[in-house]
Length: 293
Image (cartoon, rainbow, N blue to C red; front, side, top):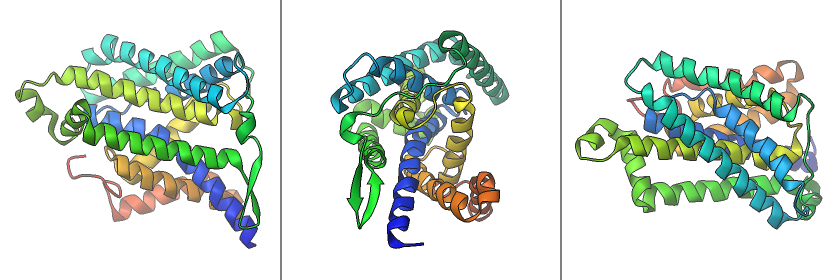
């Protein structure tokens, strides 16, 4: 492999890792706070991609308009998440975890049918903003500008999450809920409201990931299940409940997907699962997983 090809492969791996981090960080935040594995998380990703496609086409195809469409898509899906948490999940917290799993799985199936009814079964790919539709030369290699854009967006999301959980009052409460939500409840904190915030943030992150990658994929039915599996693998590898673990897991899986498909094309689909098995053998709770998870 030449140096230019290696740079292109690394950029591709990092762009995949960027999207996986954005989506899986929402999943791991919800699990860490609420102890809920949200099977409808992929549906939020799909909704974000669809909303970006229908929103961005009504704007001029500039980067500022794309950023606005990203924010609007994430905000709309966050509202959906609030409604789901309040109407459905809030009634299941005291029940078995299997009930939560089945409820969110049913929601995923319902949302997929809703997407088909609303947007049809045909796929759509929105245009890329003109500012990031070309390529840049790095080390003699021509790297798609959109790949760099995705990495920058993921870095911004990571910094925003760090500031949210370490510098904002409600973020500190969410972090405390991850550590011990029962103790937090005894201190008079309304944990149910924290759950609503966590689920809304998790839904918006999934939607943001779908919206950000929409110009690079075929947006249509089925993308919800594929991203659900990948983001779950990332969260497990990194350690469920750990945002920092989601970063590490996303990078590992991003590189496993990219280089696995290049060097082991017949086993490319199995690469991420092989990595997950190896990591869990060494670290049964994931790389940065905590004992209680």
